[in-house]
Image 1 (tube, rainbow, N blue to C red):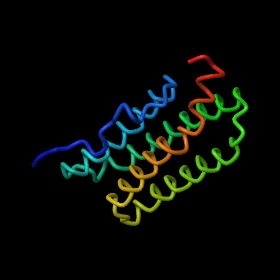
Image 2: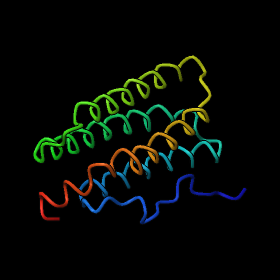
Image 3: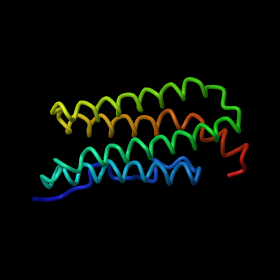
Image 4: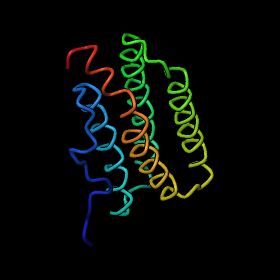
Length: 136
């Protein structure tokens, strides 16, 4: 069986904010690990720990991002925080639902779509402001 990377990171996904870009790559890497175990048929016992790791790392990332946005007085911070909170709630629900045989492929697609959209649309809205104020 050909094993593929689910989300191939592109330089176009970078915001130019080093810590945020590094964390985004880490999150994508974790999603790719989930995909790997699903693709190789080993997902049964590893899905939940990967999702818990993803949830915890996502919390760290959101704290980092929100801290940066507070420092630069990002005008849409409250809406951005709502997007973050919604993702965390959906991820938590997926973790709970996995115990009830939720299809992990649905979760994988959701995570890919959410993260790529969030990075390339929502996060790019603040990138110029952060880089100019923090001289990055």
